[in-house]
Every structure is written in structure tokens, then in C-alpha cells.
Length: 195
Image (cartoon, rainbow, N blue to C red; front, top):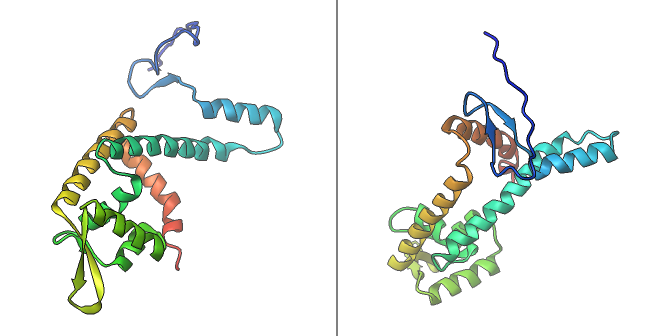
């Protein structure tokens, strides 16, 4: 069965819609973003180069900036900075009793030992974590979430997920699953480099 589409003329500069659809919500006929304009400019200026990678990776980069803004907004609403969220949620994910050694926190947050010591000090002063002696190592310590730290981590995570759901709101569940798989395929080699 052949479908017919009647061409229409639109002044896109004054059109106040994000997308224009025909028949189904998955048939997209008009949508342009900043990357489309960037790629078109490079194709015009450097037709000798294959700029196709920009179509994917420039969008990933721009999306990362939008996600960073959403993260900061979610954390600010709960009185946290991004690094505080990272440490608190590493402890929260550890499960009861919500504690890890500083070395385990280093592994999960990818910061230096000195940076982690400073972060633990600051979180301790805010009453979000506490230091406890490590029963298996007389010289060692464990970092444990306080009740307030656990509550703040949980609230900030809920806020972050609401922001992230809004960012992904244009995609169907199937599209989100497909996109997650494609991104995993790109990131897995980086995440599995030894050392």
C-alpha cells in the first residue's frame, strides 16, 4: 500500500513546534538541531573530509552538557555538589551498613587519595558521613553514611532520575533500550581497559 504525502510549505523560523509528524509518532519528517547545522557547514567548507563521526559524537557531547546541567540542578535542590553525590551514592550502593574503605571509594569515584581524604573530611563536617575504625585492620578506617547522608543521597538520586527521564522523554522505551545498547557498545572498550 502506497501512502501519499502532500508537500507543505512552512516558515520554520516562526513554527513553534519541536517535531512535525505524519501518520505515526515514529515518522519524523522535520527536525533539525545544532549538529545538523555544524555538519552542513563542515561539509560545505571541507568536502574532502568525512564528517559523519560528528553526527554522533557531537550529539553525545552536547547531550553530556545538558545532562551535566540537569545533574547540577538536581543536586543543588538537595544541597549537594556533584562530587558529594558521587561519594554518598557510592556508599549508598554498597548496601547495609553503607560503608566502604577510602580505597574502595577511590576505585568507585576515580579521584586521588589526597582528594578523597579532603572529600571525606568535608562530608564528615557536614554530618553526611562518619569515620569508623576498620575492625579487620587496626590502622584502617571505614567511611559510613549517616542517616542524613543516606536521606540526602536518596532524595538527590530521585531528583536526578526525574531530570534524566525528562531528557529522555522524546524516546520510546524500545528506543531507550536500543540507545543504551549502542552506547554500551561504544563505552565498554574504554571501561574494560586494564590498569
